[in-house]
Image 1 (cartoon, rainbow, N blue to C red):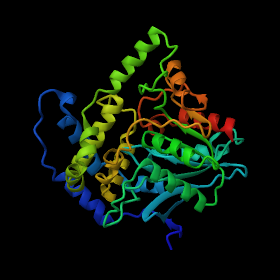
Image 2 (image 1 turned 60 degrees about the vertical axis):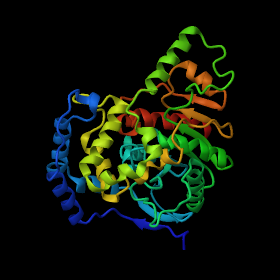
Image 3 (image 1 turned 30 degrees about the vertical axis):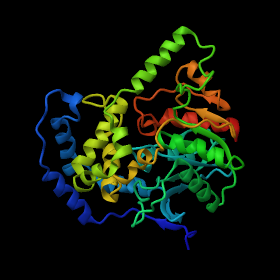
Image 4 (image 1 turned 120 degrees about the vertical axis):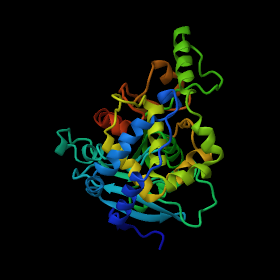
Length: 378
């Protein structure tokens, strides 16, 4: 029975949307502390965004955008799993499993699935096209943890094994893999665990960050070393959310489950921390931000999505030489040389994105990078 694949369509009861709006309108707002964004999300900014969420945001329109893509559910290793499965009209399309980021959802890929699966319909060369499989990570969105919760940890390896089983269940024996953020952790592990099936592993970023391994900095100039030091110092800055999620995710989960504004503030702060968010600097359309926030709220997965930290899964992508590797947003040449210590790098893209949520902020360059990489390894 677990191997059954069932069609799925998002159809949120109106009562749930009415409850969300009522909760937003009844928010008890905190007083504004001095310091603006340096103390967290400012009250005025969040009140404006939450007001739009309550009285301007059209969930039904976003629901229709999501439902425009074929969706399914199945159960693997006891875990309910939701996924999009969009087949290309091109006869020689390559199957491709794409894994979203944290804190995000499959809504991340709304603007890239069409060009990837139907390049001809989007004015692109149809010589490279994909059958796209986009799963919701366990504990995210429409892949909620079962009740009672499975006490076994959701390691990156366990997710990668789940993805391999999903692709096998769909009848795909040869396929590519791509991911961002959390997806950039899963993708190399899938390649390492199933090299006989994965033709290439493409991630947005993360390889080439110095890890302290012997010899990885050999041959770099003083200028390059200074550039890497500046980069790692920047990466070390932040609010300290990671250690807290790794230690006490249940405590934050109460606020996420009871207050949509608490959930929204947390998501916006992560976007701000990753991307320099703030008035006049939003690289992602607010409707897409609120689509993600609404998915988290309606599925009650704000807390369960934190397993990427609690289970020790967060960090940098692991090296693997089992299959060719590509990076769409590669960074300085010095990073590529470091990445080549543990990976067979065949593509090092130079694309730029105004946001860590690349598919949402810069879908066209990402599509170009995916097509360029898999054209070389398919």
